Length: 222
View 1: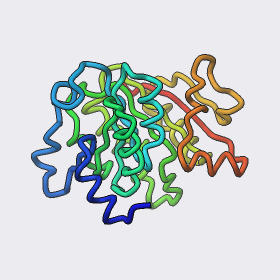
View 2: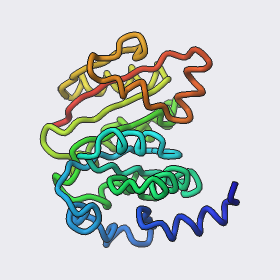
View 3: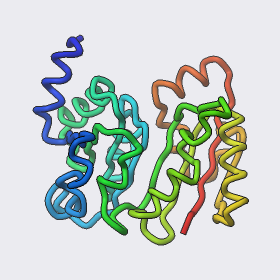
């Protein structure tokens, strides 16, 4: 297994990996508004995975859905390395990765550039003092609104009952459109959506091995 330093070197050499540093926030990611034409070179829908970790979900979805483009976002380059290397080795041209903080996500994409967002097993930030860090807090949702297409979907998968219930409250309080939700996805997977349970992240495997129930919801914010 390569060291962290070797992974960092690989990350910088991969053609499917990009970084937005704090000092470049004002100008934004160079591909902002240009993902379709300059990177993917097609007009297929763009789907984000926020807090993608090792990128298992982004890569798995990209393999299953060649007519969509996937971008995994995480702050940890050594985690992203795993998915980026698999995508490179598998010659998957419809998946890319961005290393940055989710706080800066609206500096990476232009208005109407993204069709869907996946939030897969984020840190639930259970402390009341950290509620603004939750990825379904309105502070983040207002950022998503800047680049998510009208009618665009947001998917949440989590093992945290508290985070799941918090998200349902956000949806209700803001009159968002809740399309589907379940507090036990493996018992109530929607027909035709088997990829919801067939693709597992590293953390999802840990949780399901322990018998944890996986919660899921899908909603629209505009």
